[in-house]
Length: 297
Ligand code: GUN
Image (cartoon, rainbow, N blue to C red):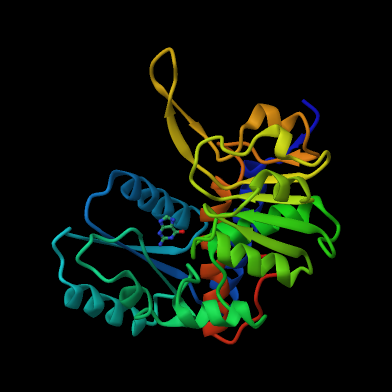
């Protein structure tokens, strides 16, 4: 193995430390405690784990956490009513509605009912438009975390060839916008892309966000490239039990890449760290205060 293993777990801890320092300053100097409201509809087991973890880490950095757990049969009107209440609540600086929502709820309608200034997921159409036009916005957490890792590893991303595998609204599209913002030449690929391995072979930066376990193989990787694996897939082990793997075949890619994120311990921990960072940023903007350095795009 030749690649440097990018330690997302340690980097996320340093982001949380910066967030905690800024939260302490907001409390001591301004009497303001940032607050994050997380809304979970239904009992999806993975979502329950994420939401619990978000609440715990929010409290650990000194912020207020407001958890709203609603029944799977909650009506759209009831959910929109709760969001309106949170939009108007001055102690709430960030609002996150955990996705996916039960099928009877219109995800776009719900997301776009969140006050864009409190949209710490960066999914509101206004934030998507602001990011796409290079203006100050709330930036989706997983792409923001990936960008932070890339910026930490490379002095500058300017002029680099980046290939993003996956075109989701949560990762692929905003990731491409962020890389463009840092002057990369960006190719977005997806399930209908022809000659994907050949395209990936040209990339200095590969972002894998397709949700297909171990799809990206070592012989797709340009020697020395940086590989950011956004995938988190649970697969069966031949000897029984399960294990977590990314969208990248780690062994073969690490033999060729210059640097690579592992799964777990790579991009994963950055997502919640960036959610906390976005909440502090939203709180500072809401109060006309200086934003923390290095915690936004
Ligand atoms: N479900 C999976 N990822 C995310 C995320 O980043 N934000 C929200 N709200 N839901 C998700």
